[in-house]
Length: 221
Image 1: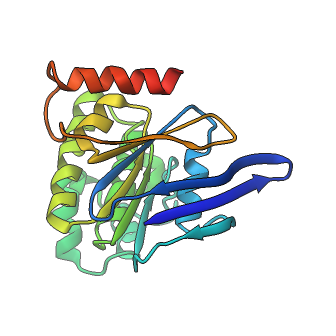
Image 2: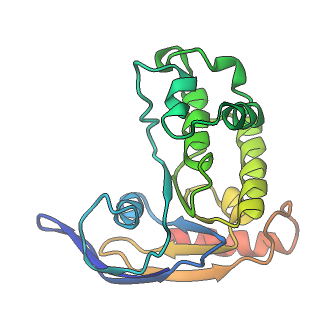
């Protein structure tokens, strides 16, 4: 997916002739300073925000995990998912994988932030969308659950060969999940560097720590 766009909000220029190449069928991590336009970029790709330029997006279906859960408050967890997927067995399988099957009859206001986030992740993946966008999808989760879900999403993406674009501030998640890591500058935002990650799905070691330190430098300078 090739991207070249410009985007402004009133007099605030977010992107000007911004270019980035998203690698299809891989996990693409997007990192950058707070406020640089990472969420805006996802919204442009999802066709939720207008822009000038082009995004060569040939994907037929898109799933989106927003920062906020966006569940329908008047529907149970099961019925929130039935809007997306009618196959009850498939819903049951996903809910068990994500450890939320016991919440199927609960309403969103009874759920914790982490539980809502897991339902939102299921909703984005259950239809086997060609493209899945994830905006800080692990921020409401405790450490152990976060890493269980990171490993599960790595497994699902590998099986389904989806294109995944994940915005995160977490360098360890970026190194573990990202085939490619794209680092953005401050506004007016440009692509600072795209990195092919040879350490995907590996625990941090003496080799990958060099890349981790490089990412830390890129994000702070």
